[in-house]
Length: 243
Image 1: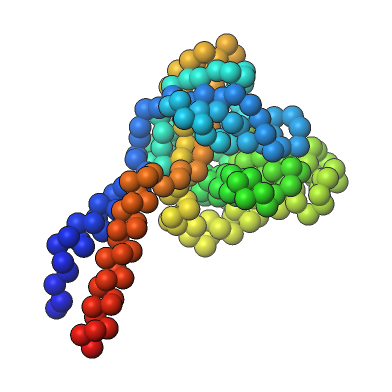
Image 2 (image 1 turned 120 degrees about the vertical axis):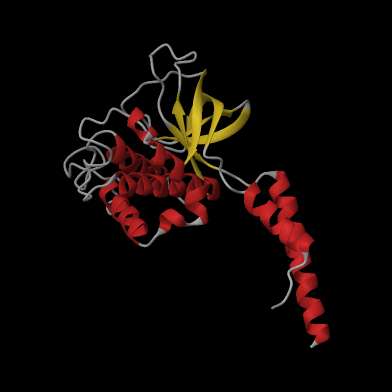
């Protein structure tokens, strides 16, 4: 059995720990402006996380917020959100995600939710989604957590869709497929973070909305990744020379 060099092993463990989303962290969320959607409340919720600019998705259509406000929240990974039942913050009249036709469990509904939110933010960042598609995705998110936006004759329904084919029901179908395919255990799923309010902050409308975002690697993580790959390359080179 070959012995793993201690330094290489230590860097591997340190890197893995550095990219793991903390189970729960207290943060301050701020909301300033909307971008990318197709009017109304849809789109990217631009704001701050602990004073640093961030792009959020509003995962909650059962609460109301104003512009230029901030509030305290607990930050959860998808796994931590499910294990803690913190998603119960949203007072869904029919239960989490059960307005959608999914044979539902909280795990399925919130994994589908995380998948849709990942699509919105990554699509916005890469410019690969139209404003109408972002709008339909946003209503799919709210259908999973808040109210039934899948009425074929309703807003963004099949008969009123600006981009026929890109409806909330279409995107929830993609999310269900992703859940059944194990997306919830992927690196992308672990990058989605949920911010559950713990107080009203400066929101005059009462309890704020539950937000989510997609984490980007911290600078230390990137440095460790570079070191990790360099050492891996050296190891492979040495093995070739010895052979």
